[in-house]
Image: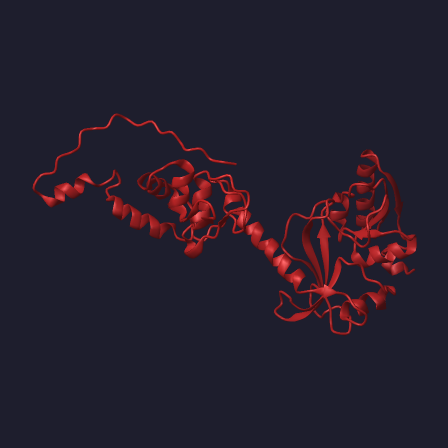
Length: 340
């Protein structure tokens, strides 16, 4: 999107004020309505705006997609991949290979056709409403995604004998591990220590990653001795997403847990994906090309697993899918407990 230059209506220019012999009188003529000279306004506003620019710019009407530190379309020229907002030193800095570079004031001047004085006044007007260190939502999301990418890059495919392979083989007899399950050799847990971990990519129906599910392990493939061995990384919203434990086909299965899904896949001889919990099972959406779904539900004493399975089934049937539900016979069991 290209911003046009704003057109501002002004009142007729008043006659310039004549200065007397007193230098203080001359200085008073250069003061703005707030009582500060333009230079004082510049200095004060520049100092106060440091660290607040993302919030300031968004408050003044700059689209948050132009406040991300990655190459993308320039809000001023027609470039599709020339611009990024790097905010160096908290000064709202940006760079475009066509337009050049500047700070937050320069961005406002370029986008809205303001001179510096006007831009400084607008910033001065809103700077007090923006907390220091305020981060635009888009930048927050970007940092979460980059953290996900960094952890995924540091992992590797599961191989025979590593902790993930031992964990899955010991419990389920799994030999070939799906590609969206990976091994991280030394992942920090919130309790302070680092452990080997099984990483599972959560993907939306279109295949785009949403988050990473972590199962912390010991070197010999047991669950790590922590209060919460299974955790999600912060990422995008998880509704509709799942761990893809096999290729999509016209018929696929969906279960809650990763281990449950792998066991159900062995039992029903089809790819079974994992929603990871009952709430996300209810919200799951099949990818394009699927017309039949097997729901491998849990048999919970609380009926949580059964309820989630039937809520999902009702929605899928309404949307035109053929649906089958399979629940283990024993109360308190899932398909991983049932065995193969």
